[in-house]
Image 1 (cartoon, helix red, strand yellow):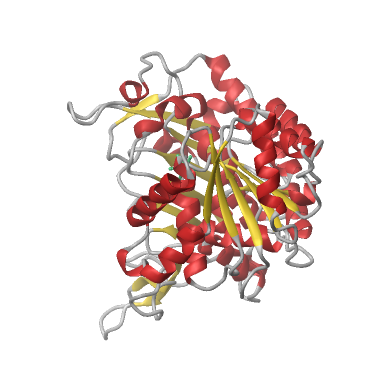
Image 2 (image 1 turned 135 degrees about the vertical axis):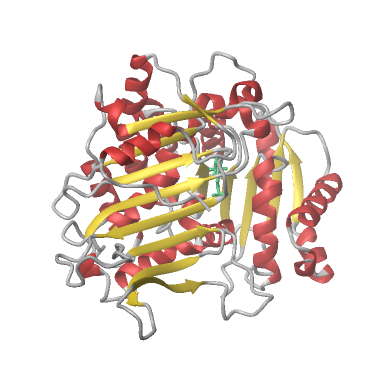
Length: 485
Ligand code: BG6
């Protein structure tokens, strides 16, 4: 379904996010016929270049990030024609004038301002837009993490943005919410009668949320070392997944109804402070592996860094539904495989009628896989067929999303969905300011307690499952992590 005509202005138009994610996503939506003929895309950056060289850069980026069989030449040329470039220094009043003239050519268009720049520029750009009259009711402002470094800075940022834009015009992206499997989690919970009665502390033993990456921090060391796994992945992506999994059913699938429910989960997270941090969290840092695989410390160029490239947290939700059900979160770089998964582990049957079998019963597990092979799997126990004894066998009921879609089918990238939602004015998959603050309110004391402890993260071998202490944390609870594969 085509969206309404729009002008999308990308501040930081020549940056990595624009080239790697935004332009490819827009191209794909365009190639699919979702973008109206008059829509335009304007790249803004400090680089002194003209529209022609920006187009050449965009073309190269599309060749790099979009599969050859998707790059239909007619669609590519049509897309490139939508692009323009403006060299801008946001502190220079004259440059804002050029932006105004460009946008005023199409006054009827929806205006989207995507701030693909560092957070220090969010406030000044929002102010600049307001001063030249561009913060209109038709405008939408898109920002992405880091949305603050802690609660105080997140509150300052929210204040800066909301002094110019109404909350209804601010789109805070967490790209995990745009992933198809994550949206499927909501379909699974709220469009099936089967799961909801089981979705509570009576039936669920615990939940594991894993985002394991095989790559290291690479060239992003200077940013990453100020953030660490907790700010880079947990405060946003993993906590958002936890909210969708744990929230009460919203009264309808509407932005505020859903975000109200997520907020309640965030407020129910049991604080992890002081000494609890040693039992409920584990931090790790990857070690070197020969001359070609530098350690975390070498990669970020800071031999004293205590920043974690791995974190595991036992989170507890103090409410009626989840009392006593731990949510174990873990994420890390340079682990043994690339795997993002939510696993809901059910309780064992109340009584084992089969007695001592050779093959014991296993708990039912519902796994929701974000990557690779996006899909759902429900492990159930069955009888191993055959006339022999009575042996139990765990069988997965499998639903891989790509299956049955044909070989050309491609899982849409999160940004495709999210960018079109911005144009449509649908905030359901975007974070509200109060949610971001509530997440920091839970995260800040953890970081403070780590700092107060003075302890270093535990080293782990690249390609491993992470620090031993994380295995021990689970073992203390009589549980095991799911395999990373
Ligand atoms: C980003 C983090 O937000 O998410 C990266 O900054 C991380 O460090 C990435 O690699 C993971 O995203 P995905 O979509 O590959 O799981």
